[in-house]
Image: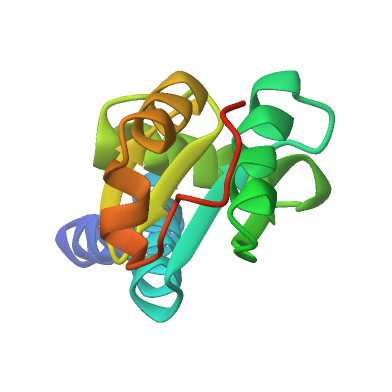
Length: 136
């Protein structure tokens, strides 16, 4: 009888661990990584941003200057924004915002985006002519 009780307890512990592991942050991170990958593959320009961040505003301004409408994910306006930001760290090696993607390619943050604009790399990636645009 005691052996049967121990077996049942062992099974209960295994089931409990399975439930806990299924609900672990790693699972959430995986779904956030899937969200990020799906988002950047579905839009030409994606900016992971925070609405109040001056660096994010500067990166978004680059695309306004280019008359381009990026798909912006404002992390501070989402319940899962913190975990998306963690997943960004795992994907691109940085947790800071903004993080800019063009045609699925990671461009970088604000300084990287402004530099790519100024040296013509953004124009190449977007297939646009910069002759009518002023520098930021």
